[in-house]
Image 1 (cartoon, rainbow, N blue to C red):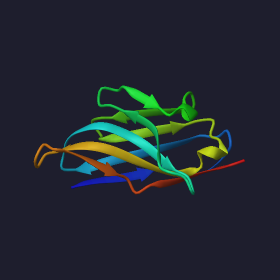
Image 2: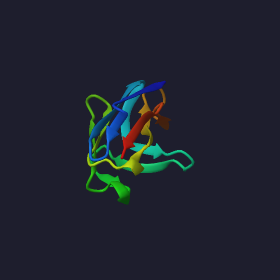
Image 3: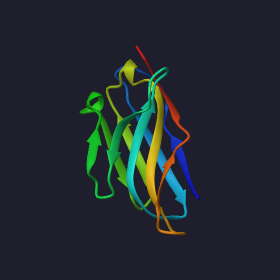
Image 4: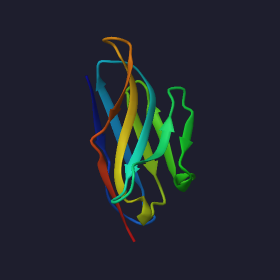
Length: 121
């Protein structure tokens, strides 16, 4: 009922930047929280950043000052601007959204398909 399309991953040298995007479509009444998670090989998936509909944000400590999450409510899209990338940022990045459906006005959580980010040293 909701589709998420991620883009923007890739290979970058340490110190470089990437911008991830995640666009939601489908039976969307409204989107509450939008966020980005990441999972490195052999590690658990972890929250990177999250943003509420009103724009309040929170970040995991390791990315504070380097990553910025934003959203465009008109486009149902969330972004993650990643600057000063480090090799330890290498992971598959997943967007996560909490969507209220038009069909029943209940909220459901959806995950994107993941986009690979590789930071070389």
